[in-house]
Length: 284
Ligand code: AMP
Image (cartoon, rainbow, N blue to C red; front, side, top):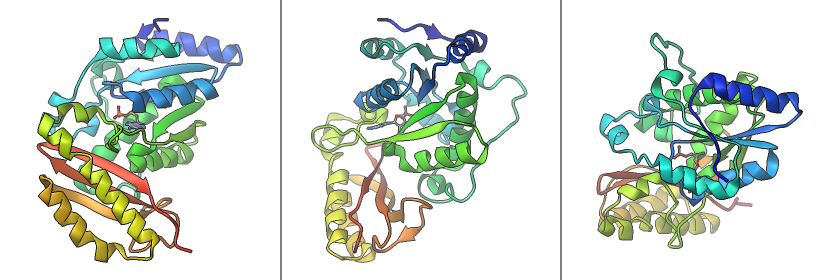
């Protein structure tokens, strides 16, 4: 069943108002399009939890700190709508730039602390852009539930915090990372990898799994880092933005997983920035 593509906010509001009047819950899945099985797993989770499901597609200029990255970002609306057919979602909301940021738009939502590290430290303004657009999408869609991937774990924590701090009344649900068969985390940016780079890309996840295993045996991150860096460099990764062990809740830096922690990585391969994060066993 083809879902209606909704481009105007008044049209969206008319739909969500009718659903809420009928006592139905609304789940939203915010995306930037170029949908893959990772996105679709969020849609499946939303379908199982909410009476009505809205998938949003908006390539948000405010969260790109690099104009070239924004220009190159894949846009595949027709294909995306086709991929959503089997889920029978209730609406695909595709606002344009003027709907999201009309002339004179001057409000920024900014989450302190959690955004100082990892991608926040390497992509100035990125999380302000994310927090601002997510706040708008939550209010525009009148969502009761919102589904985000652990693939972007820092983003998930930022969104949880803003929903709580601003009393948005949205339950933020985190969903596990979906991977290709060789371990590479699915990402719209994988479409930009050359054939040669695509072969090397899963090495980042492989290196991370090795570190997680060693951390579980009691080794320290600081001792494991040099060999991991060398392996990535040998695999043509040009620069590593970060490869760090951090606490799940407040993202503070750790050397050993003495509290619930994840291993986070971001590195550049043939002009594409790949990010990933995995769970690590807790040291008893
Ligand atoms: P994006 O379109 O990249 O902004 O992603 C939209 C949503 O899909 C975010 O909540 C992402 O965390 C989530 N997502 C992206 N890739 C994956 C993946 N491989 N597995 C699970 N969720 C994902």
